[in-house]
Amino acid sequence: MSEFTLPDTLRSSSPAVGIVLGSGLGGFVDSLSGGKTYQYSELGGLPESKVPGHAGRLHLGKIGGIDVIVAQGRIHLYEGWSAREAASMIRLFDELGVKILILTNAAGIVNANLKPGRWMLISDHLNLTRQSPLSGTAQFIDQSEVYSRELRELLRAESLELSGTRLPEGIYAWINGPEYETPAEIRMLRTLGADAVGMSTVPEAIQARALGMRVAALSCLTNYGAGLSSQPLNHEEVMAVGKKAAGELFSLLESTIPAMVEI
Ligand code: HPA
Image (cartoon, rainbow, N blue to C red; front, side):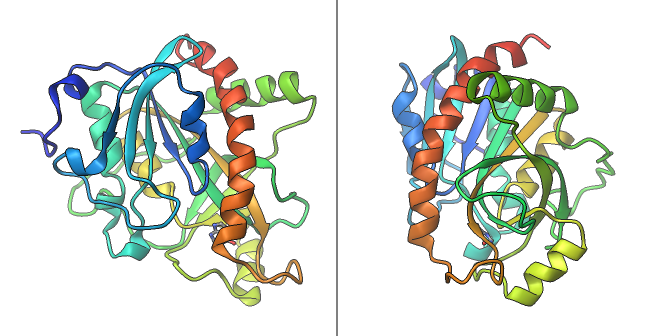
């Protein structure tokens, strides 16, 4: 029995690639060709996001000639949802046959060598919430390569080709939020080996691996973590940076997705 009630047009689609957009990256969908759009409220079984900048729409379309499904708006623990609920979209993608998942997010910089406004490829994560989308099951899944090495290599090579610059890779720390970190917490995260910090992505990545998908994840580095810059953080600033980065992401995925489905 499916946990979702979906319109027939969606149920009969067969996207090869699923994409989840992070805060402020909604502009990405303007570049999608063709396809249909569904409001989350039209889909039975999905929790509804209430955060500004998280629209709650699902789009079918093509990128680089490949059928994709794009979720604009995700579910976070800080809204009161569980990790399992935060990963609902990934189980929906799985029901449609998605095999490759590309997760994006807005994240704060923990490693001061990284630059705001740039993308960071996630190589691994620290789950500091200690919540799991697999809680209540006995899925003892291997996590030695949550973020596919092959997909990362493709994305890095393509980014170098497109922009002439290297796409940095790093460790993403998942925290509950919704408040941003204190300077002491940012120092702690750096000591633990984190390069960036945010409030999403990890439950979806864990769920996707449990379902056998290959996963790539990219953080849009919107701001320095507290204490690394003299400016206080605000949600509007995070959204503004994301807008610009959405265009770059689309170009990168347009040239990488056709190769991703071949490997
Ligand atoms: N911390 C946590 N999450 C975030 C940040 C941050 O500084 N920026 C964007 N998402």
